[in-house]
Amino acid sequence: FGFAALARISFRVTAAVSLVLAVLVVCTEWYGQVNRRAARQTQDKLAELNRIADEGFGLLHTVRGLDAENIHARMYQAQNSQIYDIQRERGVALGIFNATNGFLTTFVRVVALVLGGVLT
Image (cartoon, rainbow, N blue to C red; front, side, top):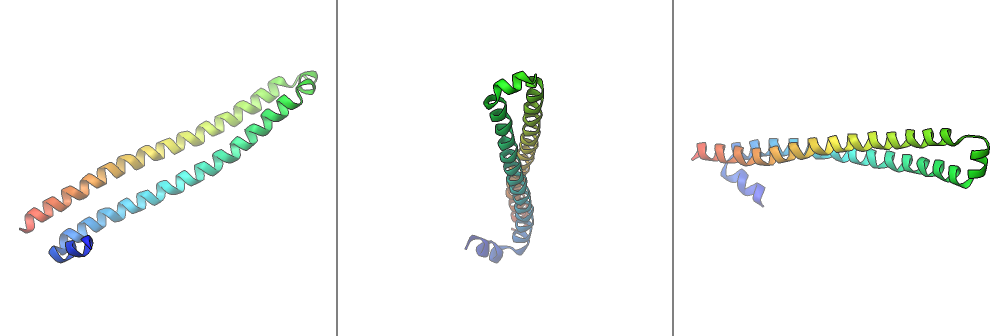
């Protein structure tokens, strides 16, 4: 109802607000994809990390007997680094999304006020 009322009052304001909101929807969809991909990758990497830890602790005597503690530690560290990289990418995407979201929501208000003020 609000959109229809805005369109009835001013087509220019409605078009400008719709354009900005469309950009906001695209940004939201992009962040959702990044977030889902990061969640899947993190879950997979955590499963592999758990497998490495279980193997290292479950076969501790064998690992020590074969002097493979350093190998397991490096494998564990490599998985941890990959998880860190995935989460850092997710954090950057969240920062970009929040900055864009904050800017665009304020921008849509400014556009509506400026165009609405010009039309009266």
